[in-house]
Length: 112
Picture 1: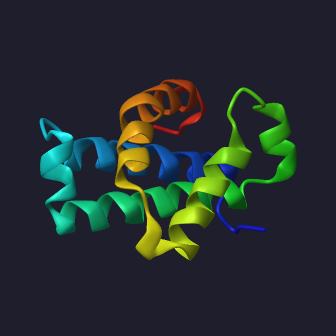
Picture 2: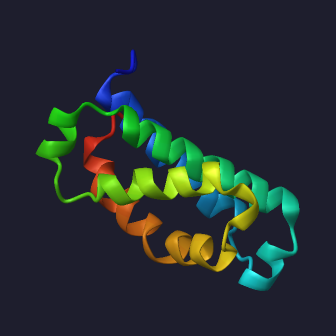
């Protein structure tokens, strides 16, 4: 699997979550969809989140079953393989509703 430890992969996920939140801070959805650079940065960080989640060992994911690893990986696959068909309202909804929860759950698992 990955040469990075599970803790470092969790750090990668959390860092990308914070980047997404920072890039979109005080930005309404309408401004987000009008700003291609921000879209690219946010989508890229969602890719990193999904890739890091995918590289976690199954045993680790089984231990932390409170996180929907399958959906995280699935979203990553969707944006990577269907880039031109991304629904930005879904990206925004995940950013608004799921990322704060993910940060809160993963925080205690981080090395930082």
